[in-house]
Length: 208
View 1 (cartoon, rainbow, N blue to C red):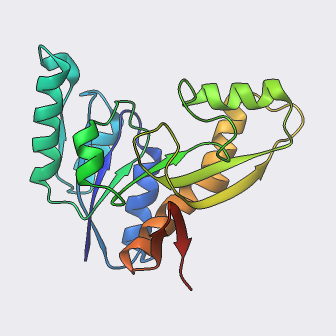
View 2 (cartoon, rainbow, N blue to C red; view 1 turned 90 degrees about the vertical axis):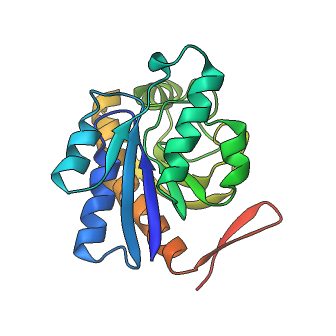
View 3 (tube, one colour; view 1 turned 135 degrees about the vertical axis):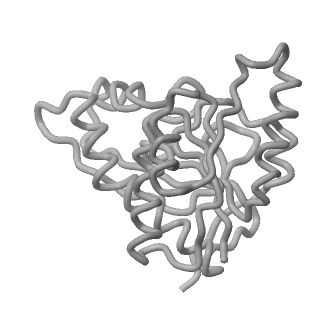
């Protein structure tokens, strides 16, 4: 049984997609062990509570230094003894020690087809604003392992979504969530839970 810890800063729509996929059996061999947010007002914590999932807030605002926060954050993460950590819209820089400890056991969902519209400064609506400003015809989402870079880890799954005439960033964001993010994030977790993802030479491979 894969013990999954989900880290989230906001509403938790991707968290909800994971919860629904586990409940419906789309994701197998998996249990959501807990949810951590850096934002005590995150609706994601309420979603977790409603489903009986252990949850807590660990905020940098509550500590005098980033070092102290990193230490308490790592303690909280380790306390759940996760097999897999899922970053589902988590807007806090992951401590290097945590990346090292959970290498190839931490994944992130990004709302673009990496390497397009990714890296520093590209998150949330900013990604979709940039895509529309560039005039691209196809966008999408990517699930990748987390490494020391920003959106640079081995890619597990990607799914394309067409841009439609008249799209606003908000409309495009919603379509990318519905058609890509909420599908490939649970799928990636299910693949990992069933031993179907392997990393070799810095590349992730999905095994048949």
